[in-house]
Length: 516
Image (cartoon, rainbow, N blue to C red; front, side, top):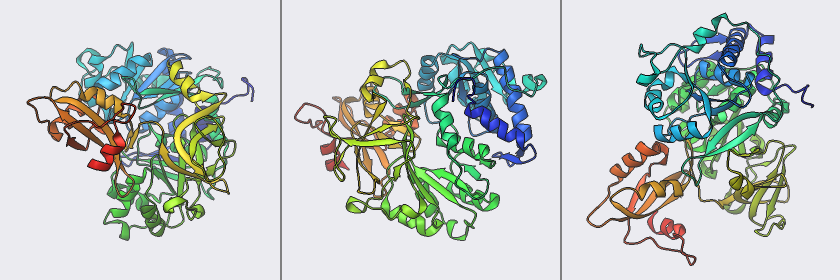
């Protein structure tokens, strides 16, 4: 596809919506239905208004938004105007978000009604040329200097034409920057281009009818991708503000949900909820799960409860989706009864290699390397980090695994020191650096501990400063205020010293074995 023929993913979605204007496209968290035609028209108007206010190629539009129709409209509108997208995740502290806003050169910050309270903390910490509200300001003020959002850009767009801006998106234009944990002071920014994201829409929808997707996790994460695909394939989306197991089960029955996505710990919450036995789950065609390790025992339980609708995905923000395991492939087990994460998707090359780069035979563990059209362009403004993981188009994933004789992949461990929790990735070095500024902490080591259901939790071993005895509650409050709640340790272990490996690094395996 050449540059002139290229149609971006947001434009594909809007065209699909406009082609069937009477169909229901969205159901908001408050139960309001929005037709495809109304949503497409509002988004085109918003795109033109944002373009008039400076959104363009090379400009970053940052979203401080929840799971709202306005946020979804802004997601598409900013892209149609040619700007790159950045989302600020729930669970991050205002100082961390401020660092991200500055690092991505934000030109326009858009805030919806769900995040105006957070915006009041954020705006005094940032220097952004334009701050706008996606809808009315709920506190009655529109003064940015007082920490509240500016003009309602949706109301301002009402007089714009219902047509996209005259902008030709190119495959190598920035689509967005997604953030994950990192070893620097702020999370790493993963730079994604329009061309690779557009290729995700070339895969035909496997269902027999248009999907009815339940977005019960953040649109800033994978729920946004699933929402994009549902709308493109003629389906509709039900938005929920956040994950609540009871609300999810009620919505599945009430809204006749066919598709949803959850992390494994959230899947377990559904299984353990007392309402599940009485909930009508017959509409479900696809329950996708992934993002962290899953317990084989709980997955088998889920298969009994939900039926043959579970789909496991293995991917990374740096590569998008890598492998998929279908509903009728969950009997593929490896060492110790571990369930496979699937086989590589079409167009994805996967190799398991030793430390010297040698490709390993079937059954032998090594680092997983991936090459595909959806691999990231690199880390934003970090050529050093990019060079560490990208080589000749191949991405070093940092995950350890092995392939069986039929090409199914099994994950075993991670090379990189990262803890995968609900909400994102926690890099221990970031939390350690912060904790060492606490007056009661002399030394520390942060590590992840998996429970019996393979859910990871943040633990910290602490050597107390003389005359101090830090408590878990104060340490959690300290970390939450500066980094966000997902970084806060769930357990604190006071130790006389931090054990070291032979090369002088904290021996986290020894700590994990001894303390957890």
